[in-house]
Length: 142
Image (cartoon, rainbow, N blue to C red):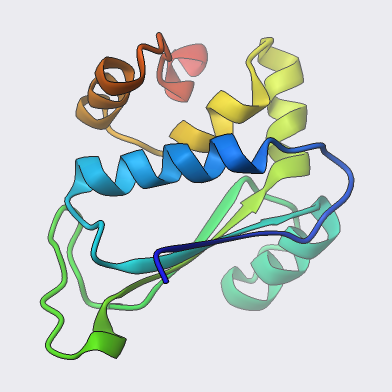
């Protein structure tokens, strides 16, 4: 299966092919290309509802993740024993919320969606492989 990329919103135009390619590159950098995952792009209303249900926060947000392995520590690769265990989980991207953040900081939406919540090592590897010159989102907050 690989990556399932769903766009369930129509507020923000997305370059799905580029986003899919970049997610595949990130999976390679992480060493989890054998694992399936889904990326679901949603609007503010949907991400707010999900955020309210699962985090008890009644507001939109940029990213919500639902890992397949709930007890896995950051940076560790799951030990899958059967084919149906080769799953990383689901990532919901609040693209409308991210778009508003990008407008405030004059950042490209696609770059923000691709690199949200990534470590500097991953960012530098992504830049090296793709020839991009992306910077961490947190840089604008410091």
